[in-house]
Image (cartoon, rainbow, N blue to C red; front, side, top):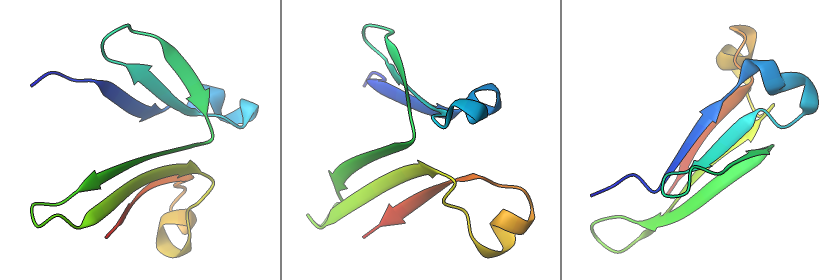
Length: 74
């Protein structure tokens, strides 16, 4: 297998409103976004969505200073 895409949070880009950086693992191109998602299927064929969004934290994570959370929907 090879890495097709990476996603990371960049605190320095927080002021732009788009601190989530998506990098194409093949070309190396990067883009800044506010929200990123990917739809997959689990081993039983059910859909799974991975979602990263800036300023989506709630409750304890938000109180501890987190601004960007990975959510897994199944």
